[in-house]
Image 1 (cartoon, one colour):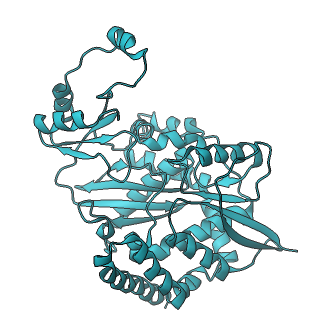
Image 2: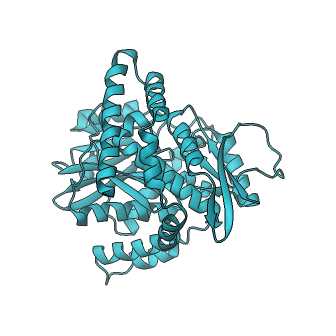
Image 3: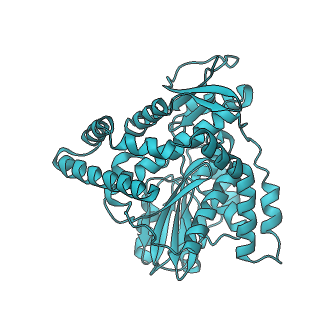
Length: 413
């Protein structure tokens, strides 16, 4: 009898990648591992009242919702603590995804994060204890002086932000005061700008698999990911990917994206904590099949091999490297990558793919060339894109996905 593994999908309004993920699981079918047969299926999770002693049906859950909805967040904590359900992102380091803790950790580890300050709320919290506390312990501060220490131009951005909401480029004092006045009750970071950079990257990481993509933050949301392969030297691409793996292994995140600016051969990570990384078909286009294939591969490995959920960060292992004065940046990054490979069981994962999912790449190409995927592409774009741009985006995505499939076939030959 086959062992059945149910993968729960905790979703907001997405339809594209969940549908593609479900279709790929069907195409993979039962798999054999160490003499046993395993069947994988996916189910979409309802947000309902729950008994804290209830037993969930799921082997693994992909969370795309709890970053803003508290009910599923608390359910995830329960099933991690009580039921050993595998979660791609550790719910107990979730608060670090508000950016601030991630900046602090990576600075201590010697990663080249630009100079960053945290500002108090422009408008204080609505709490009767605030005023007497602030009168005693909150001294006045000179906002322009802090900006001068950071250096113009700089960026003001929410410490808990996402999707570029509330991010403002600050050229001088007038911009600074206007942006801070507009920030309201949100705490803000001031972060130095990396001017005249060579390239802006966004890396999508799923388990140990990382794809470094050229990214244009100034473009329309559906045009930001560029199809530009080999735009970094192998050494720089390896460094950017290693930083992404380091962040994820440190915080026990396995489905995350990282933004890194490259200038003069130096990599400066500026945003690397994304509770719900972009995986939309209309955004990723050429890169979308890689994302779905990687998600299927990692979820299958975790479920079938019985990989256990790691709740303990073991930060000391990383700090023991980061605090050493006798190691240079490259040496530290290499050691972090060894720690990340151990956390992700990279060697075991690669052996698993070769043995259990040897035809996954071929199955993915067949799927994205199928009428089934073509219908999904059209439906997704009609749901997500304004009517006047739909036909253009349909043709664009069709062309780019077909280009990916052709590149995969050529590489296989």
